[in-house]
Amino acid sequence: MKIGVLALQGDFAEHITMLKRIGVETAEVRLPKHLDGLDGLIMPGGESTTFGKLAVAYGLIEPIQQFGKSHAIWGTCAGAIFLSKDIGRDQPLLGLMDIKVQRNAFGRQVDSFETDLEIDELMKVTGTEHPYHAVFIRAPIIESVYGNARVLSALEDGRIVAAQEGHLLATSFHPELTDDTRFHEYFISLAS
Ligand code: GLN
Image (cartoon, rainbow, N blue to C red; front, side):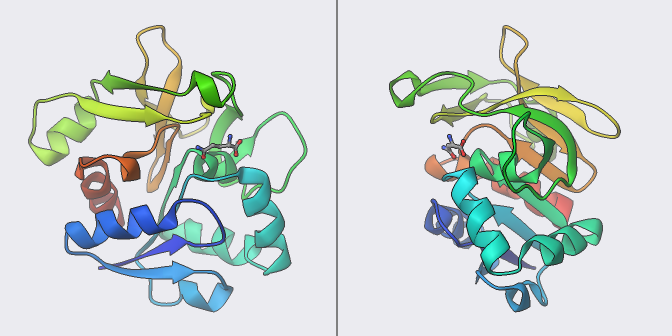
């Protein structure tokens, strides 16, 4: 099992640390050829507009779209924005996942927050019962899921913060910034 992490900008190093902790081989992805031989790809938190610009410049958009047809891809925060089909404004996107996302939906940097989430699927796959502590940093919300995408987790007020569409996964929050490896384990189960 070898998982790539998109390393154009953002907190890719934290994802790599988490993957190593659960014994997964990793690779930094900056160019199309770096996708060769990978079983899955994680796109980190950061700034989605920057991901877009650099991915266009390095010719990565189409190769990642092709990769996503048959491989697992997980986007956290900015990565989830980049993965989506619709954000209601014009910036380069992969457009792989049937979700509509609203950027910076909780407000500015000072409105960043942490909260516990009950995520049934995650608990089932990892055989655990305690809630998942999620970190939101200038986070997007998933406004709606359609097509084959489904809600994986929502806040108490119903706002969607995690979605899945087959082997594609999107989270508004940052599992790479906690000590809890369960979300990374969950992703590995999709990549296997
Ligand atoms: N606000 C960023 C964006 O719109 C995402 C922030 C993050 O990844 N923590 O791309």
